[in-house]
Amino acid sequence: MPLGRIGQQGAAATLLVALGAIGFLALRARGSSRAATVPSCLTNPGATLGCYEQYYGSIVTQTSVADAFTQLKARYAGDPDAQRLCHAITHAIGRAAAQKYGDVAEAFQYGDNFCGSGYYHGVLQGIALSMGREALSSDLDAVCAGIPGKERRSLDYYNCVHGLGHGIMAVTGDDLFDALRGCDGLTGSMEESACANGVFMENVIVDGAHGGHYSRYLKPTEPLYPCTAVDGKYKDACLDIQTSYALGAVQGDFSKVFALCAKLQAPYRTTCYRSLGRDAATTGLNQVPGTLAACGRGTGREQRSNCIIGAALDFAYYYHSDVQAKALCAAADPGVRQDCLAATAKLVGLF
Image (cartoon, rainbow, N blue to C red; front, side, top):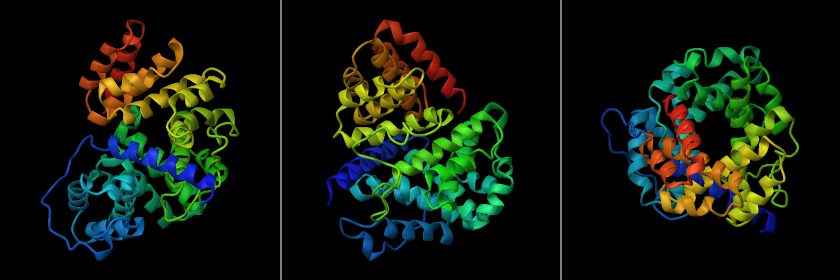
């Protein structure tokens, strides 16, 4: 296997583990669980994503979304392949729900944030594929119009317009720059940015996670690409996710990624450092000591303080609460505590 592919797979694993960890928030399984026959392809290590997709998608079709999540969560702890592919598996559950209900708002009613909100992204992928590019692009604003909380930019509404980015990638054949132009069809800067973030996230998570499907828009020798090549209005949305890939490309060396971020102009440096905070929270298992240690690899207050703020936001998302994030803020240097607490409060207000 070429060295480039090794770097890409490492990056994909870094992000997918991060998304798997994030997904333990809001375990909202509804209804009763029904036993399902586990296919033979899942009985041995090294199961392919396609096997998981078929299995959990069929559960949605035969019983319910809640049953699919109940069984995935039960399997997760003891199945390293399910952990590695969890976000992509929840995409498949979402796509199956889109096919079953045929409506974004209805499918969202059965949603679950497990493994990085991949379910919602999958719903939008399924809807986009069923509509086709022309119909989808004709009125993008209408797709998420039925999701509650638009006026306050709720988490569900964000997940919908973010999911559109995943969906547009699906109908453009994962052509990143074409998909970004598709996001321009949305009204509102928040909507365009969230959609673009979905495009960039899809670009990273497909890398090596779909049976040899590698992104054309990732370069192990340039870990922050494509963020360095996109228009300025997309850079924040790109950098908000790209550090997970960059960290994998440099074998987990936080110091090297901090140095890469430091080469960026303001305000993009801030986004990059805060994105590394999410990665610090992940590698620190969303616990204060390990997270502080990872952020401590930064040099200077700007790097470390923004890393802490980014990590606190991830804590709040992971635990669906501000308790652990406040503990992280309190353990940080006094100079960052108030900013850390304010950022946490703003995020929790969207739940």
